[in-house]
Length: 92
Image (tube, rainbow, N blue to C red; front, side):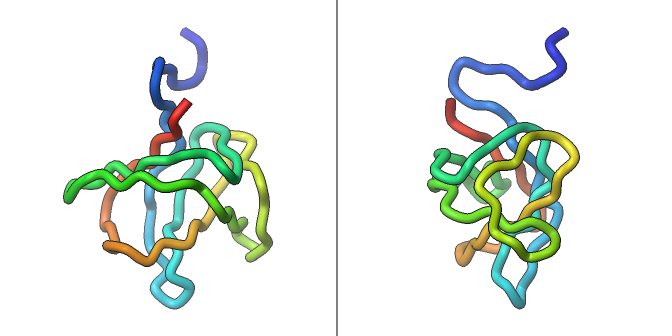
């Protein structure tokens, strides 16, 4: 057991826990490290969406460049379909 998710292609980044309609941001419960510039994939019941992570916002509203791993909640701007459920994966 290694203590983190592992794959040749993707790593589980986090779980979508909500959507801030006013700020148009996904709320993500982070499970593994990711940085601005990483290529991510929203895994949604309606279909998957690939995108490049351009902005991370911490709970106090400050822009950050990296999430070190589990235990963080971040927001990411998102103007597409508003998901009720979903996961986020990071391409390796």
